[in-house]
Image (cartoon, rainbow, N blue to C red):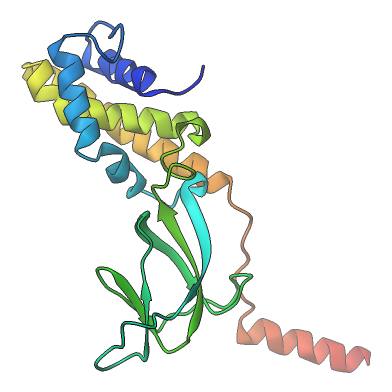
Length: 206
């Protein structure tokens, strides 16, 4: 099934124990409350919950020519309009050399390199807000967040709150774990003891 705002709303209705919404123009309180939650940034809030592969954007960033830091790091980098949160800041295009000495402030990154390679979570229509790219686990997370956001307005029933909270918790854990499985395997760098043994072996074999 193609993901749409309507399917997400109806997923939230299932969690709430509400009947389905027929259309996004249906004159009904549940639809209006869900519209308010959607317009209030529920998708951005869901994107902030993890480092989602489908929402991760990589850019080559060059230092701003109009902003010069007054002190500290020498260069400023303007954050893109679709920025949600930083995933990685590196000094090489292959994202192997992670930069640890930088500042992440409201609208800028600050560093001592004039070119950075940055991965960030994006809410662009081609990344985080492209519903067609959402895995089912992330859809479930958004549905649960919608339900949690409007539960008091729609249900008016404290007895349902624990079930809705559990649905949200389970959806968050499931989405994060499945997204992590889609990332390439990463190996920790060899420690000094391992490096020393390998060097010794190479020398002895030589």
